[in-house]
Length: 199
Length: 199
DNA sequence: ATTTTTTTCTAATGGTAGTTAGACGTTTGG
DNA sequence: CCAAACGTCTAACTACCATTAGAAAAAAAT
Image (cartoon, rainbow over all chains, first blue to last red; front, side):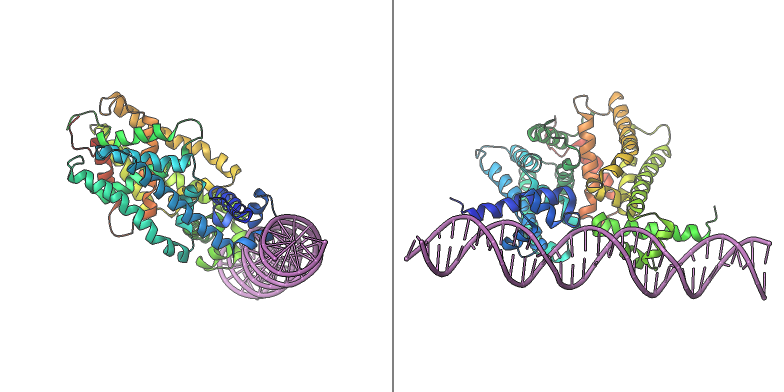
């Protein structure tokens, strides 16, 4: 559990890199920017990482893992008696709070994945897919259990859900609303619909 | 209505620039890439545009206007008797089809805005705001008319909706589904909810 | 046809960014 | 203490990239 100085420096570089990549994207971030924000010279970074690209790749992977772990942990923390809807709720809240409150890594991942070099994208695809499967499971179980209408296309719906969550990066101002509040409203809109007429 | 040769070249540059910026982002796109994709040398671009930045700014602005115009036009094409829900439906479909079928400009805008230099962002804010207001109006009118529950926070919901729509850029594969199909499913999920229990 | 204007190109220029070499400190283990 | 291992820095190097100068080609005007 104790971190060597080297490990801590490495971590500091990763942290600031995540911040910078999140703000300015991969191509827009200079190794120098990361170095100065981490209080060192650019050359030192190469003692810890082979290249800017490799550093970037690690940030992306950590981002995905953090989100996945947070979501899984939040769902598993629920009692066995929790309804599927409550599980999905918890998952949404965990994903959102990772993005909005703790998540330079996850945010860097989400904002940059689309413009990431192909070879990196490919190496991350498996983990992404596993994460997607996890959500798919949550939704499928809810549907099987009769808590989600059977005529809803779940893979499509999952994309809408990811979109609504991930887009929050573009508009949420820190301090205004908590992830929990946003999550609650999102889950409510999605489950119950916004329409006034009864079905 | 006839375009001079010069105008057509200018247009060709804008078109290819939109494509490139969409794929690789602002910082990741080289003037040279745009030039070669448009069948010319980089220097020629500077006959038409002051700088890469100015070219980028124009692409962004066109992207926003195209989406706005498409949405407004689609809504106005409906008969006066159309319900608010139908209007919102039409707006969603227009926005989506602009993104997925005709929209390198709009896509470039959406994917890059977050990492755009501040001065450009500021100049685009007014138009963005106007577009947001247009959607706000659609939703508010629907709510006032009793077609949307009164306990739904519309500004939050609007963000969810934009998220679900804009995120489609990250997962829709061309040719698989039409914008219209996606739009219908999205509107249905949102209005009616996915929950199985009656409220 | 010849001049003038418009458009495009080739060839620099200047600056910047990623990366490496190797010297200089600093820590650690004996 | 001393030496080996570790970490950081300064100073290049190289490649690339936005941009400009100005010549050449193409088009339009006279």
